[in-house]
Image (tube, rainbow, N blue to C red):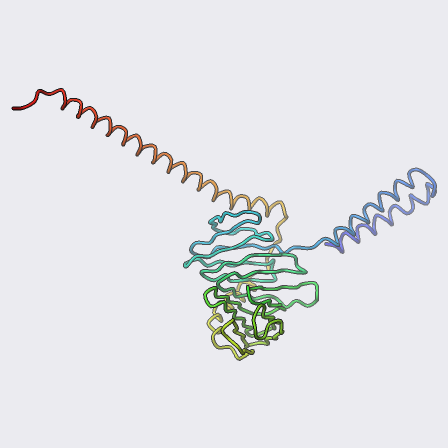
Length: 308
């Protein structure tokens, strides 16, 4: 995209040069041409410096999956596919499974009982924050420093390079587990631990690292506990292989799909609340009618002559 814009500007400069020469350097038209060309060059430079974001999409595979949009405190149950923005959070239930895609460069499986924040979706500094649960990912090899990706847990920072990896975090044991599968590497830096804090551990293929406050000593070892995620890794490989026809969506299209997905939840909630109000009104009306009937019967009983 940037190359096309630059080529267009060069073409414009070539087209305008003869006109500038013909009209003279001091002419009003010449100054207007120069001003317009300079503004276009500045705008192009600004666009190139803007951060490029991933086209992040969440797909609900099964069960209950919820999204908390950036700036909101309310979780919304979603279905189908939902575009995600920075600071959105995703939460799956005990039966919930979802997948998260980053253009055609990455596929991430979000496991059951997982809470994940998409903290940043800039290609140069993408960050996922795992509050609990597990994720399994397959990323294409990043061939330059333009693309960076991190996964953070409450006790670790994981710097990822194009790879196959999994990360788990247990709120109960405050334990983080990281694994690399058949390719790539991950640099793991534990945080807030008495032992091993701020020391970087590099995981190569088929290695894992498990640590927490109860582990005094830990080091990378061959895959064992985390090998249970191999099936999910294979699925994510298949997803990336099927992304050859991936078509990026415009920001306007993403916003429309996002609003549609989240508004469905709001509409369902409003209908449910309206139905609940109607039900409560009906119950109240029935209770009032029953009370009136009871009062009439009591009044009629008082009017009847007493029995000897």
